[in-house]
Length: 201
Image (cartoon, rainbow, N blue to C red; front, side, top):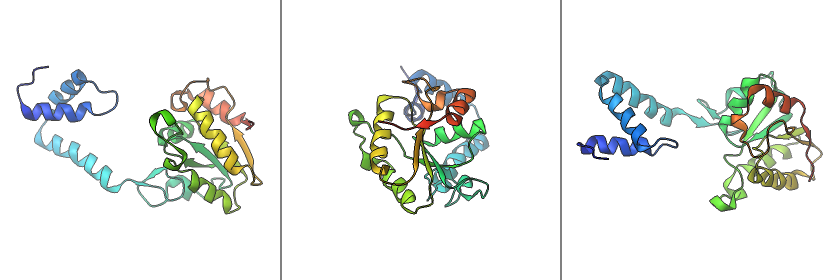
């Protein structure tokens, strides 16, 4: 692709580094931005700079937050004794959209995947175990994607938590095997959560 400006080419390369954005789409977006006013561009770039500077990970559950503790963990109406274990923050958003869960979350930051070089120590598993050790948790719900990697992660965490006096459950298989949680429709996800089953190996 011939681009007659090194500045546009650099901008296209940066835009194309985003997942799911190819060179052609990146060029179209960059040219669209080029036609915006200087003020619009400043607002655009400031939004990302402010996001990078101010968005934090919740010190309790690792959800994204503007504060040290996220709004879900702060909410006194939430059942703090139930933790729903998810892969990333998009899954928190997907479950929250169902308006059918009143507990809290724990964001692992990924799933165990040897093929991708991701092991248990790369995830927020030890912090989950630390939360359970406090003795205030009654149930852990596995809400990871119904894939081999998701099941491997469930199994690993189950073995770590098996000695604790808590209920360990998982979403019912209304979420199709091989699918990612964030792409499930709200009704299916809600029913899978409500009809969760004891986790067995």
